[in-house]
Structures are given as structure tokens and as C-alpha cells.
Length: 244
Ligand SMILES: C[S@@+](CC[C@H](N)C(=O)[O-])C[C@H]1O[C@@H](n2cnc3c(N)ncnc32)[C@H](O)[C@@H]1O
Image (cartoon, rainbow, N blue to C red; front, side, top):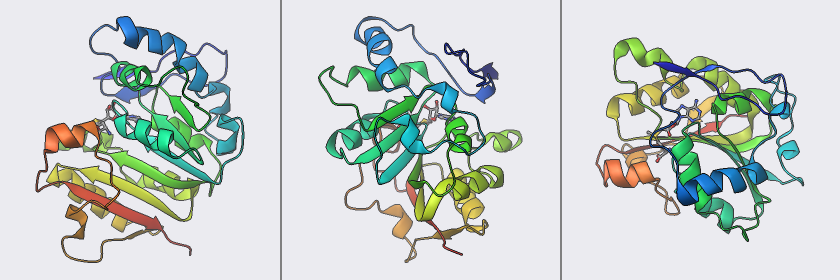
């Protein structure tokens, strides 16, 4: 089932679109509802910058320029993103998550006193951001445990496909990284084949099973901790954009 994109409140040309998956679960109350009204406006990407023409420098999302920009598409409840932006003030983090309850959980953990200069979010399809930002501008793109869309007839909904890989290849800096994970073997294999078949990407794996072991500084996402529980089928796929 599809649902339509949320409405803008700034009158920009940014379109509503179809997106597969949930936008809202249980009704929001208390601190999560409060965070959505108080914190989101402080860090929400101005949608007038989202024109899907690769013309927006990611620095325009922020009040200052950074040397390092990282995008996470589908951050879920955002625990990992929270830890990263809080502990790395010199890196600019951009996150997209259309699921309102996930976004609210992320926001409620940001204290009002917390500096938010290096985090910007969109409560919508992350591909809108990817299609809007300038070529060669991102250091990393994270797609962690994307929805698997198990049924064969739904495979076309998978976020990793050649069209989206073209877009990721455009916006990553040379040597920039595309990082994908999954505990679904069929999806991990799919993502690995799709990226390996793309001329812009090179798989970093250097030994037979190195994709099953996360790097030392890896921060597990909620889904990874809860769903996979150290599952032997967890795959960590690191691809580098080649410089040709
Ligand atoms: C299985 S969950 C994983 C969440 C998180 N990455 C984790 O590992 O805990 C997949 C998430 O991707 C989000 N998602 C799906 N399609 C998306 C898209 N096009 N842009 C942004 N988020 C998306 C869903 O709303 C959902 O929260």
C-alpha cells in the first residue's frame, strides 16, 4: 500500500509523492508530541531547498559550512544518528525518516539545551534529499536495514537499485562511501550484487567473511540490536565510489 507525502507549510514547489511503508503508528502523546512541535522546526530541512535538480549544496541546510557531510536514509528511531551528531560536532549529519513515530523518538532524546548546528532532518523520502544535493558533496551515505520487501513482485520497491545507485554515485565525493546493512540474507545479497554491478562502486570486502563483522567503531541501530541480536546473517556492506 502506498501513502502520500506530507504537506509542506512553506508553499515551495516540493511535491507530494508516493512512498511505500508506514508513516504513522500509534498516536503521539506527551514528550514525543512535544518534541515534534518544539525540536523538529529547529532542525528540519527547509523544503524550498529540495528541488530534485542536484543544485543544492548541502551546506545550505546548515548555518555554516562543514568539511564532512553524511546522509542516513531511514534512520528509524535514530539512536545511532543521535550518538553520532552529539559526539562529532565537526561532521554535518543529514537524516531522513518518514515514519513519524521514529522521528518523534529521535527528537525526544535531544535536550533543548543541546547544540543542533550539525544535524538536519527530513520527515519524508530520503531520495528527495539525494536528488536535490550537488554532485560530489557527500562523504558517506548510510542505508541500514532498509525494508526488505520480501515478495518478488515487490522487489522494485527496494531502495537499492541501479537508478538510485546512479544518484548515490553522483552525490558522493570521489572515494566517498555507501554503507548498507541487513540481516535478511536475500536482501544483503541483492544490495551487494546491485552495487557490485554498478560501475561507480567498488566493494571494500577483502576477505571471504569480512562483511559479517562490523568495524570496531560501529554503532548498532535499534533494529540491528533488537531484530538481529548478533545474528550470524547480519551483513555490513561497505562500497567506495571509485575515482574513474
Ligand atoms: C527496517 S527499518 C530500519 C530502521 C533503522 N535504520 C534501523 O536499523 O534501526 C527501515 C526504515 O526505513 C524507513 N524508510 C523506508 N523507505 C525510506 C525512504 N525512501 N526514505 C527514508 N526512510 C525510509 C522506514 O520508515 C523505516 O523506519
